[in-house]
Length: 288
Image (tube, rainbow, N blue to C red; front, top):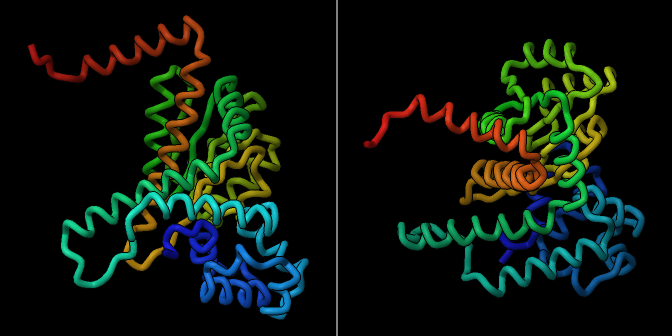
């Protein structure tokens, strides 16, 4: 069941992005044609099968976000566990609505399971510490990830964390120009390679600003501009929505940061959060 293989999802997601060299594509094509081959092969045996050097194979694994071939094998073992606890998720033409419903829900569960594998707890803690101690947090993104930026603004503001969500690309640049050394810039962008975001990230780095990124793609162009990178997952499927998968991963990551932060708020901050919550009630009609 290829849909549950973590490394196959990453290959599919990166295949047409220009991230792969000629040798990388040879490996990618071989793995896509033989998705279950990795468990029984070594870098040397894969080299003989593909004509690609062992060193290039290790670099390819790192490009996918793994430490090497052994780490990629661990992800396969984890995927096999997920597969063993799930029904067949592969969609087929002719599936009725009930079947599609069950398979999409199963696929969504798989995404969350794989997110648990992707996210680094130490980096989550570091990101939460940076956000919690910042004078101001500026949240930026683009495209579909922009919807999660707005959600993050809502979530952090209710914890009485001073923050702003800036959607317009030009306003983002202006906001970055006004940020100080105690501020934190949070990027939420699944692909990690949109031109406008990269341009603003480079400007933030040049200004010496603290940066955090929630990204889907490992080793994306955005990576080199980030102090903390929270890698979620990238998915590509003919029938399942990769857009929904990306938003689910981003929102879950933001929710984890919220919970870490909520556990560290002092009494004054908690009271301020309660005051914010009460202010929202003023905009709601009483049910009494």
